[in-house]
Length: 461
Image (tube, rainbow, N blue to C red; front, side):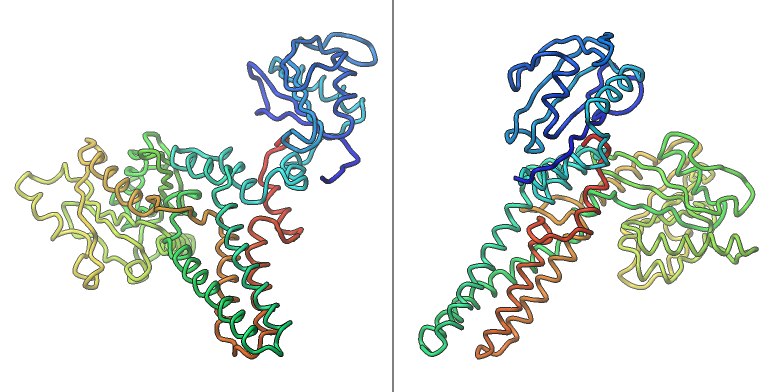
């Protein structure tokens, strides 16, 4: 257990007016601070109603529920106090001021979770899962975050690290008994078997289509097309609010406008972009450049055209880079019924697309009447669900996890490429591979990684 000299306090619930606010304290002075506010200590883990008073004057601040969690059986591993107050700003400010007068200081963002990590209560992947759980906006994100916070990734990566340690032990044994050829050869062969099996597991884990990262960050959908085909109107219709300015003037949309949607529990980020045409100004040219850039990074491009006419040709940059393209034929209410069968052929520059890169489907919509919007939402949700559908095991959720796993895989490939007689070099490859895995869970002390993880938390967590 790590011993911290100072005691921290913070509002752990959301700031502002509320029915109940929670103030949390952790550190060596937590018990004394609670006594200073509320008198004799309650039994640990028993909620107790007390009057909270200003320590110097004895003036009543509030009546609150107090809880004491005795270390090391607490979230941080230290003595922890929680005070459940009426959620007025003045009440919270008075309690925090009183705690500071009793020797506590206001915590930094993520400092409670950082202490839990330092005291071995959680590892880095579990801490990241907790942060993702706080940020979760959809049911699918919540499920993934709960699994990670519960240690599903920790157990997987620690089991792989254990296999690496076994291979390292065998390699070291081969080095120690290098004068006994049978022993050395057997140890090297057994270590190699472990590494071959682990390399296959890593390759399968890395070839997940980034589904965990996409689920965590959001499935990105870009609305692209020529000016005045109704992209901004479509964005507003999907968002069910006026998120973008709609105007008959071509080139109104210059910058990217984003809205976040919850489609059947899946997080979807829809971006309205500048119309693609021959630019009339430097500002419009920059907007078109951003459109192409967003489209190249998107998980799905909705290429919007007018159902009654021929749309702009889809840029080669989007055809080559976009993961999936769906043609949206807008303003279908302007077409006569008998013309609708020709929409897919008449609109959107389909002949410009290469074989095998045609849209999955064509969806007719009218942002004016609402026709086809439900069909479009269903198409987007189906593609998003297929892209980020859970597989049989844990998935990578963070870019830093993927980077460390790729480093580990490269080290194992270096090991397998080594001559069996160069066991000292092979042992170093295994050590680097184990370090890469250790960085994910925090087994390897990397201050910049710790700072990156815990800075994401709000104050009081």
